[in-house]
Image 1 (cartoon, one colour):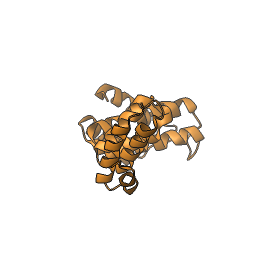
Image 2 (cartoon, helix red, strand yellow; image 1 turned 30 degrees about the horizontal axis):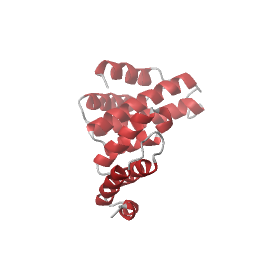
Image 3 (cartoon, helix red, strand yellow; image 1 turned 90 degrees about the horizontal axis):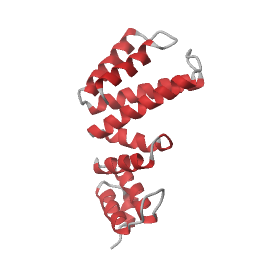
Image 4 (cartoon, one colour; image 1 turned 120 degrees about the horizontal axis):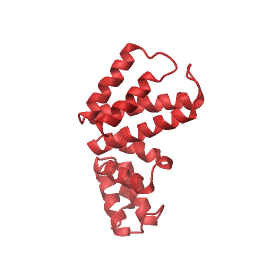
Length: 168
């Protein structure tokens, strides 16, 4: 994420709230933003979790936050950017979270996040991506050799189901 963009978006989260944010929470968000901009993968991930939670409050109009679909959409976009940044930096959970938000991302970005999570030792993602290649599912070309490689990798990362699918 570009620093100027993150400053604008995160500042808008903290300052545009309809309810006051405790100073410590504002400080925490600002510190997480600075750390994320500096390349700290887990800071991006933690900030994404907080921004996502806030987006849900705006979507539902809960916890004293007025219902505001436009603001919720803006915060969801920021969440995706933060998770993508965390994933790019090597935060495994950020990659997994991106795959769970697949309806908000282009399919090729979901595949990228699955592959990145697999490369970061998330065996379940190796299995899921392997199954997609094995079946030729959701825009992924059928490639049983690639599927087998992913199953082996998933098995190496302690996914028992992947172990059972390795073609001998």
